[in-house]
Length: 92
Image (cartoon, rainbow, N blue to C red; front, side, top):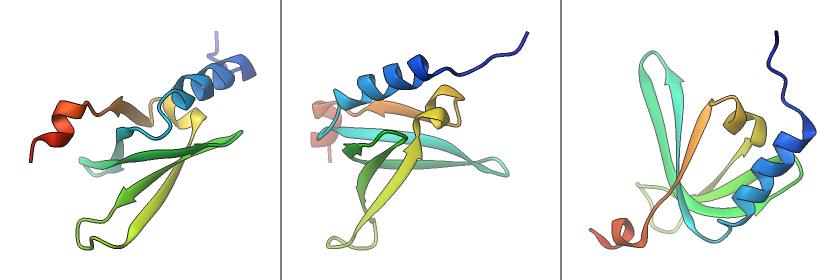
């Protein structure tokens, strides 16, 4: 038996993410060779096939980087998404 991602799965994933637009999230993905890539930023937009996150660069306060992932990346566990709580944001 084969696992298949259907349109309803993609729609549900998109709908779940739309609840977090404007909120801070953390994206964790595999960078290869035992590296983990972590991005934190504000969920900017949810488009039909991808979502974008506005991340501020650590080396610059004025430059912001926009990264995008597809909903398939979440469903296949290539990237994990977690909401960052307000308490975690205020701890400096």
